[in-house]
Amino acid sequence: MAETRHTKVLIIGSGPAGYTAAVYAARAMVQPILVQGLQPGGQLTITTEVENWPGEKHIQGPDLMVNMQAHAEAMGAEVISDYITSLDLKARPFVAKADSGTTYTADAVILATGAQAKWLGLPSEEKFKGFGVSACATCDGFFYRGKEIAVIGGGNTAVEEALFLTNFASKVTLIHRRDTLRAEKIMQERLFKHPKIEMLWNSEVIEVLGDEAPLGVTGVKTRNVETGEETIVPCQGFFVAIGHAPASELVKDQLPLHSGGYVQVEAGSTRTAIPGVFAAGDLTDHIYRQAVTSAGMGCMAALDAERWLAEQE
Ligand code: NDP
Image (spheres, rainbow, N blue to C red):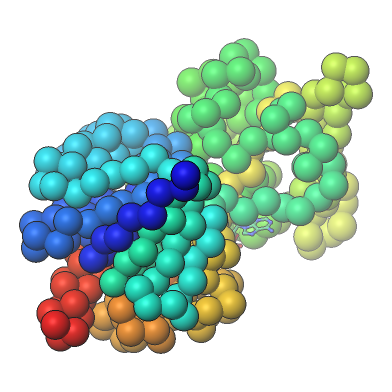
């Protein structure tokens, strides 16, 4: 028979926001349950080096997340490998159904489901996903040893992925729709100095080109946004790094969202429009989107939830 479990605080999501909320809630003795979601550890598990987590000059993203999970568990949080498929925020206690069949009821909920990589939305991109098209250099870079790769995007992710892919590729072309990058200056400096990286400015990708049998990418067709000129960039791997969209599917019809789908919270807090429901991290933040700011919001959410629970008693 399917199990039903009750908790004072249910934390949904296992990035820096979720784990930090779990550490604080556990230390407040509310015995939180954290449900990890489809990608335990969140976006940092598919990044490489993290150089801006205070106290760690250099740490691998996946290692940082393993440490955070261990920390949350050591403090007494219960971390569960499962995926919440529906959440009822009208019910009291709140009701969350998980993929395993377990139902969680919770007095307070902390939403920390983060964000996911965005895609260009081209039919040819969809066709070659997993056959040369990827959004994760750490996961798939290894397959392109000695091959040519194109990356699209102009933020930190694109620059970081382009640099990482030089470990495998013979050449990396970074395609960006403008003539300046959004990435941090220190990252740009590394990028421009790299002998294997070439920039293609003011360009968008209009089609992914490839073979049918076996299915595989052979290049991307780009268009110069100023002149309209079309070019083919030969490559066997095409990495999309154009930002992220918040994972607000669970609550999109229940809570007010900002444009872009980010959950709205009261200024200076993690309180959403529903008392007892708190949101933290990339799910609510379209400005900073850093591991450390997410962790900070996770802390705030646990403190907000704890105070709210105390007020109810
Ligand atoms: P960003 O939103 O910062 O950048 C997205 C990039 O993709 C922009 O350059 C944007 O162009 C471009 N873009 C968006 N849509 C399209 C499109 N449809 N076609 C072509 N190009 C497009 O996202 P990131 O994922 O790079 O970074 C997210 C956050 O995570 C940032 O705050 C970043 O600093 C942080 N981060 C930090 C890292 C670190 O510190 N180690 C590593 C990775 C990310 P335009 O510039 O023209 O808008």
